Image 1: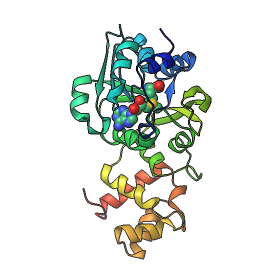
Image 2: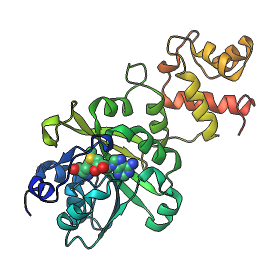
Image 3: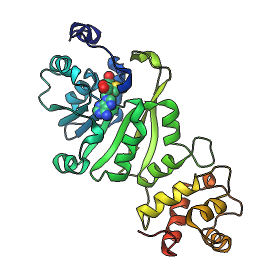
Amino acid sequence: MEDLRSVLLKHGFSFKKQFGQNFLTDTNLLHAIVSDAGVDENTTVLEIGTGAGALTRALSEKAKRVISFEIDRTLRPVLSETLSGCENTEVRFMDFAKCDLKALEEELGDYVVAANLPYYVTTPIIMRFVEEGKRCRALTVMVQEEVARRFCAKEGTEDYGAVTAAIARRGSCRITRTVPRTLFTPRPNVDSAVVRIDFTEGGFPVKSEKAFRETVRAAFLSRRKTLENNLISVFRLSREDAKAILAEAAVPDAARGETLSPKHLGALSDLLFERGYIKE
Ligand code: SAM
């Protein structure tokens, strides 16, 4: 295939910063992402952000089927050329945020997500699969390196936060590789990493998803405050009740939310739910 840059040039394509357009061209890296995602001939892949189709084509060579969403319609002529012959691949020109995930999942069945995500919407996209995804088995996504560290952080570290706990509730998370900024066109200001979130391993049940979300939000509401004080202000508990619940959940006195593991936050949310402090 013609060099990707020449194809873009030929079609008069101009990069749009507002869509987070930083394209990949390194063939080894593209194949490495496909391999990290564990794609084989039985896999249906959902990609968000087709770009010029470099990753899409690499996915298409290994997968059963690829559905790829792209917001920028000006890429249509580029993609007709770069994805020619990819019979198992379909590009949908629309904002992924506007797609009905439930209907899409009914259409796809079990699937994995593989994508070099637009950085301005990384977390909302990931959280959508974490909170609403029913048939998604795993996400293997390129994100900014600092965001990747946040996703996979351990409790008690600076990177640990509400997003980490939400992801850990659903599955396991690891960085599969770091990627220098020099491998993107145009070059972004930060380095990146590929992160794999697996919904088929790790994770843990909670009595109420809503209670878990609210407990996590409260735990990280004010990092300078103790968990006890955050619970009091969010759930309007008396100090006595807050102390009793925390003792029952084996949370040490004066602990801060960020020191509790995701599972520990899950146990605390179960208690708050059972005692009626959080309602469904
Ligand atoms: N997959 C390509 C690659 O690896 O070279 C492109 C990746 S680029 C980081 C992100 C792509 O997502 C851009 O092509 C951008 O136009 C597209 N995009 C941005 N926001 C989007 C959205 N809300 N829905 C669908 N695509 C979007």
